[in-house]
Image 1 (tube, rainbow, N blue to C red):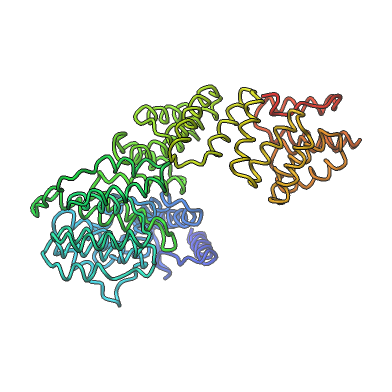
Image 2: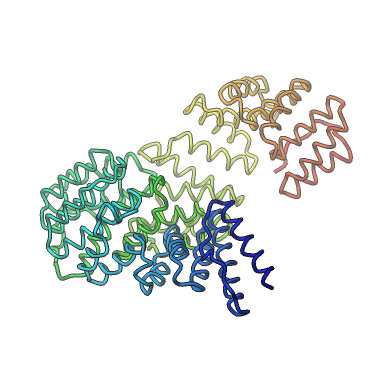
Length: 581
């Protein structure tokens, strides 16, 4: 038993060295009883799991494994650090707090102190924040963006103690990243507002806005203060500018509707909920700015902390959900989005993102979410989203109806979508019902509105080839598209296909071989290549390509078609996949 245990220890140490991670336990030889050996074995196993999960990017599994390992040895600072950091990567502040709050003070790193500081400020113990976050240069190991966030959290603790000058001084220390420091002016504006200094607050907001920092929470704070200080026209002008630039996003349009000339409610320094809204907005501004720059790590913990102060800041839910979804932590993303009321400023954003996440796993549920959003607000963005989902679920008539209404409305207003995108979307719906004339008409319109777009040229050229219509025109379109995008397997395939349709089999084969080398996982290209091999009397190779296509295709109808070719060959000029849908 002893020798076998030594081998286990040596194996784990070697693995840690291999992946560049120091073993998170004592390296001195020890004498173990059976129970201790089992306990230590569990520690090793959990540590290994955490290291593996961290290396493959599974922060949730890493956190759970490191916490489990730390439970076996609560004096191990390395395991404690890893568990805290893993929780912070995906913004699980509640579980991070559960292990940090009762932990031995000797274990506390800067991240742990930040968690304690936010808990202290949230519970009204501002003095504890200043002790936890002294910001001595020799002690802090925060990344620049986390340091900025922590300084602003401390600034609010100082503000609650009435220390205006100290609060503003620490809040003005930059992170050194221009985009984030620009947005931080909005956060500083909220501090000025807290102290009743609306003039300096507006100056800070104006500095942020004029620098190009577009931050939802910051903009909302800015325009509401403008409106409440008798500058409603300027507030509306700012929102009109943002609506024009982001019209496919209904957020600024929703804010527009909330602006009036009335004064903002007077801040009551004893109103904890109201003060927490200021703190949440201020920290939320910084965390949203961080989300646009990942050079300093995940901002999910900062977003989660800001939400703790004001759970109604739904911009934070949407931003967090986008990041979680990108990390494939969809369940947590869905929970955050489902918590956003449909009639809130961010309702449309949340519904759109929720539908896209859910749709991948449950198309019917995704469509239902999009339809609810459409019913609540028939904005252009909601109509386009639903139209796209209808195409994906073969509800082509519904999609066409929505696109018709959007194109009619967009023609007379700024929609946020370029017109060619709308015609292109409707063309795909027409293709679904095999209305070739209208599909080609819309594809021509899209190409006219956005000339030189190889994707649009490819779509029109392929559709013409597929229908044996105007093949010389299709060839010219696709040759031009290839010149613009020579590394696209799909575009080369389309050119090969039109040459095949024209009976130029050798030329077609040349293009299709290159197309498949560029996109070897596309069943349609493999099928076309097989067709070209067959027409150039290379029938063995044709069968191999058709068999390959049958493995690459997902639909049974596609598989059956190409397997029929394997059995019967290619007697007549084949109809394409598109023509058979």
